[in-house]
Length: 450
Image (cartoon, rainbow, N blue to C red; front, side, top):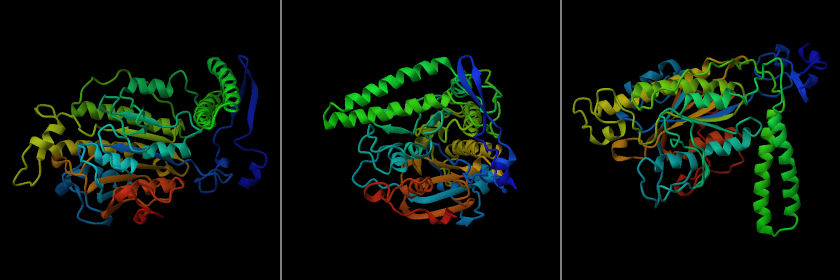
């Protein structure tokens, strides 16, 4: 019965008219008849969009109080990850995976995350040997959204980013909740659930100018040599992406039931790396990020809790987290550095908040998290010696039902790149393998695949 009704009614049916000189299309809301019988896909058969995200924390773990004793489902939660209890069923934990340096030097707080996110070991601190995996995925799944990807950080520094196209094109992170709100929900935002839609005349003018530029670029490419033609083709592709973004801003978005109004922050948190301020900024940025994803402003996103050399401080304690990893003695009774562990437990609290925030948004018959795959990585395992073996990692979400959750996976000293490779294959990237030298892999992590 539902499908027969769709013969005369669909989300493509719109009301058309004129408003302030522009064509206006107003889509129908996301009615039940637009979903299948289970609420897991559109009634046309098109799946709900699946999104990809990353989360980062600095300075690894204390293995003794971080790594569970049990492998597989229903793993135990040692003290350093006890904060994950409420979201454990949504999370997979990966331990005993290694980042291989081969002939490359150990670059402190850099080598580990670069390998995890690019598949290759850097030779110098300036090296960016390949695109980060979030960019690769965004090129596949996020070209039809307002933003191809979003980057945010909770440590207050826009340079705290783990995303880049190449050595000269780094995706800076937004550190201000106020600025993030204005970017996402300010004057340029088109509410998909609004009853009216007014095309922005400035965007119309820019698109008109761009069309002329595209025509001229095409004409020029017919008259230059092969090398210049390649450069012009790359430029032409960038202009086409810009044109696509203009088109999106001039078209009434389809209604999205999970997209809700977001309150503008009254003010930014103080400029501080004190742990409670970092947690507050992380919470504010997370809430904005979650709704940006729910409103389909992007399908790829990155959040950093801290820099790799985390400078988070504890009120009343004289050393920041990074310094503490090197200078705090190991407690002979506990067998680890207690204050360093205190800092790591705060990062896990924020990771738990990030995951839970995605579960609170209903989407179809499940939640927004059900239609996400989020990777969480760090720069080292034991930061005291900058170790990049036994790197801990997490995933959250089921990627639209394609990933099992609640599992602890022991990597058996296999390459850390297996997780990134698994993620990219899940999002349809045509890769026979990923990584270079000892980090090259063609083996997905089968334990989590449905």
